[in-house]
Image (cartoon, rainbow over all chains, first blue to last red):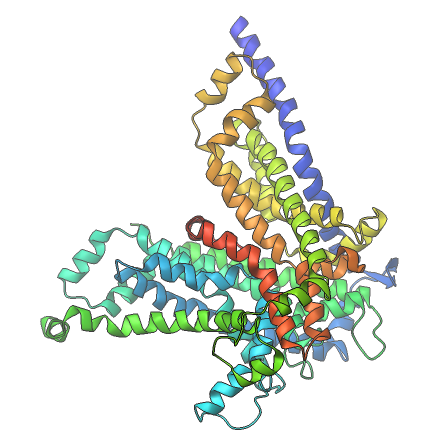
Length: 310
Length: 284
């Protein structure tokens, strides 16, 4: 009886202590993340004057978002983000798998290569963007090297050319984050039992066959993590564009993304006069929020179903 | 099948591995060459950068560093970044460890719901809330303030930190806190003197990834900081790049200064960072 009394008083103390312990983290998190996010979604249904909510507007912000003049910006940015995502999937998460596999086959040097490959990922995108902007500038070292090798003539203007600028930014992003897939794939490969590869080798499977028929199906959780992360990161892309091409996504919006467009609408750099359009910005935010949450959920489910259990 | 295997055997195994090594060495060069150019250009004048692209500088002059530190006032930004990063790391660790302790070790009946609420924040696109966040910060008087940045960064990093701490604390034996409770230790002491020292790897993962994310961030200073006195390093750099466009030596030197703390940390903690990323992928 005394024991029972003791446990129930312990339970009550624990409930009280738990609330006190959780409160600081919950307060900071709720005030600076959950509350502004909820208010942004709610505010997208209102008409705004400057930073003041005026009256309920239903879906009118959304209908303005998809038509001229905003529509051109929106679809342009959406296309650039989508191209960016597929570029990252092929050139970063695809080539990264090759690098990880090569490191997995070698018993020496893996730690060294992993550390070198990952290093750009700990640098600020501002540093990475500024560095590559200097290297790729007309008169920069890349122009000098290409001219010297006879691969190119004259002034290099890849960042100023609307056909090549987006591709260059994607390449810089690949350079920046290549270490991430390499680390995640190698961690995944090391969890696969060595016996499986031994057995395949005895059956005469070559390296390429082992990678695609045995390792890849077992790497589905790693691929799922990478796809989801790449999706979230590319659809939040802002820093590299801002530093290398400016907030307008130069030249002539060729590198504009959803978040740079959002930033211009919200903080006043869109259009000739540069006034803010908060209603439109919040509607864009809500659309982007839906794209991100639905996309993420679908991807998690897709890869969950394809996870092979051994 | 055996016919296919023959060509593999006729090569010596070392020679067969040559293409693979070449690929790995090529990417290593692609990573290191731009960083090498960055470092040697810091010591060159702008004219020398154009004349002598890849070579070592004629003299190891620290002129560019001195100018970046004084004329561009990078020293000031550097201190701001240190304060914001240090503050956010400490606040995130303390409040997240406090929240994760009862959520992972008490039987409350609402652990799962609360944990889910925190975890949902790992994926939330917080940049989209920046308009409302701006309004909130203005009301609270936290614009142009390092405290404001510390609070926002902590709020963003808390979900990841709670997730890591809860995972590490959950697997500790329950005898640990029960024995301490028998001895009359309070819950605060149990957490900070018994549980937290047992989950040191979690503390270092949270500290490393919070520090990297906060030190490098550029978006929130861009929208919350207008006064030069409170600018952090990435924000200042983004201004320099436009302002001193033609003074390449100065820009390279300021880039080198701003990446120095991260470079030092990376050299010391490369193994923990590799393992942390491989295990959780919890970057960005």
